[in-house]
Image (cartoon, rainbow, N blue to C red; front, side, top):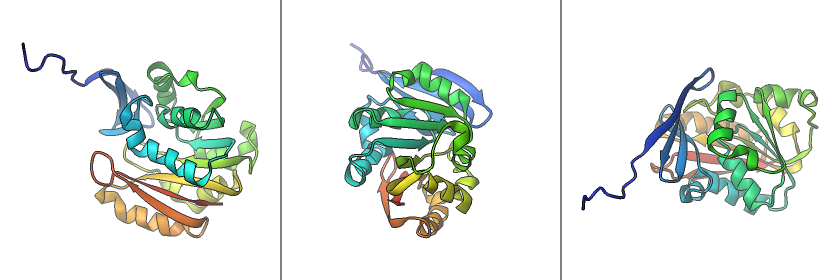
Length: 229
């Protein structure tokens, strides 16, 4: 018997180029799939045990602690839909709207991550900044959502517009007073100075800003920054 019998090695099952994200790969090992952009895992199968241990599961914990009874949630950034799947399962299929700028990501989420199985879920393919500045153009209403999660990345890069006061103010207007706003930022060593400045800046917009550093495959891959509107 070969010692490698039964070991399933990771393999690329799909690869394409995106205008927004560059090279996008779907990897598979066993029953788990991942989306990789710039060698960063942007999504993972929601059924994988790792999904709950990594940043997606930590967002669920923040929601359970700070907004357990929410009914309407806005996700800025969809990726492969890991977060949308977990939220739907943990919170009894709330009304959910996801905004994703990259149609390539939406197609991958549908074809490889079962996106269309999520109930009460609407996907808008457009720029998150445009959606929150002109919500009526997308049949959305200001102050409609109990929670908004900002999870916008292009590979490892967090868009500069995502740090602007105009963007933060517009996102805040989408959430009801007393609602919860959560930002996910990559917190590797070379990002930490920029993210720490962003955390201080958010104090001008949100109440009771809290940070949760999330260990991933290294000691501090992500930080969740959240507060009340």
